[in-house]
Length: 270
Image (cartoon, rainbow, N blue to C red; front, top):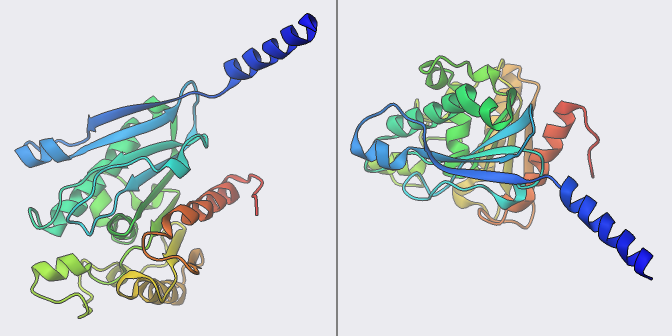
């Protein structure tokens, strides 16, 4: 009995020692902007597996209508061998949307410049986010000027995975323009304005079209159609039946992981 107990204890200890450990470094300033609001707001958290190299990286922009919310490391991305970066950005109406987009681009630029220090691979960066965060991811993908301002090529991102992002001009951007949320417009702050055929894979994930916010699925469906008509062959659109705007987030991570594994040539779980 003692010999069996000893063997079991050794097995438990070996498993414990071999388990991957993860760390989170919080509130890293990613900006060169010097104003007080930027210094307060423009920070990010990095969650990473200790002792690993060349890991895929997910840059995650939080939701909140561009007017609220805070950086987060989604729990569904934890303990998956990923480096995850949760980034804040300045919020409307305290700043205009061009400032917010510039913040998002600066956060991604920081990732390109520093993520190897945390075991991340700059060739495996995924830019993602939910709602307002998905909207920011879309615009960084389709309008190359935002990342180019920081010396980065939007096409060097491995893929973009916006969760329920707005494809027309964001409703809170329109609010600052005096336009109501159900009056659709497409200007330079609409992802649809920047449709192009030569960007990385674009994976569009939305909730049920009857439950989504302000016709969000329908916007994404039109964006997907325009991307394909423009000649982009790697635009994918998913509708998560039965899930609303908030409820679609957790099941959406399975789609992100599936596309990541496909791109890495790994086995995919159904």
